[in-house]
Image (cartoon, rainbow, N blue to C red; front, side, top):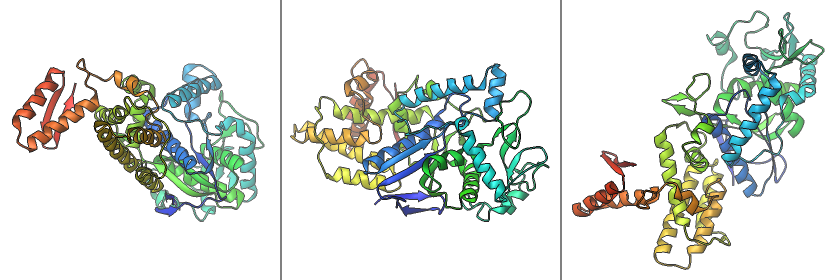
Length: 459
């Protein structure tokens, strides 16, 4: 029984699709004016994992991930580059697809661009104005009247009165209320625009997703996802304008992934503390990045560091090492491992616990290999099958491990095993064996660092 943590109710709920056996799902995509960074990769690896597992569970999933290809940042960057904004966005859409392909992020079923859906956006704005939920201000911009929607703040838990009083609200004399947000912006000189009954302009950010999601998935659909930073105001505003326009509930389950942090701050372009996916891929393999992302629960905050990625590399190599010299074949059915794996994933997509099951399976596979047990092929096939559901172990084990061995042929997994053996020797007070293992590793170019928490190693 699948349970999803619903940010609308702030609790885990049993997932019940609107239509039996089918799921309609929308995830807010990239604003394409620069290369994607590791913070972006978390969101789209997470929702790729969600879609993979839902399909494994037998659901017919329609997955939409949009592209924002017009906004202030895009216009500014295009002007700085002295190029047409279409050229800028086309270049970074191509780069995004290249990065996502390398990370094993599957293409969504549909990937709408905001600029291709201007008529739908204008239709929604016209309905909102007609119902009294939106208005055109003196400066020509069209705003949504937040005060007209009684449920505003339900998703984020924010009160309009508190937001009005907060310093974060910028004063705009064109608005009737400081909390109102723009649906249609009048174009400034030398800016791209579309013709409308309100004048030459372009859509606001929030209305894009409402128009595209309802046009492709209907007024009411199952899952809406995105980064935690989108919960307010973006997703809050989506709910307000969508439900006021259609008169129906917008989305049943709201999912938000946690931030990637650097030195306890959210990774973002505005803070300048981001690492692009393509730069990180120069030092780490794609599956290592994916393993790093999915080793933590999707709702948690994670810290980016070389040490974390090194640990991901080590863990992934241990899994690959277990598959060496195994001819995988038919996957055994209804095993305890698969039941535990699926139990973890059905508990709000708990990939950390699912990966722990993979390591338990690896341990038993290694034991079976040591004993020359007839279960080796079945266990290996199951390990690869379950790991593939998370996007791991999709490469040839020998090729994957080749680039991370010492001259003496020690992989990261081999080193981890020797470190564990040395720690056990120290517990047993077998100092001679502990020293012997240290000497072997030192000769192989491995430096051991003992501390109160255990032993760390580096090449």
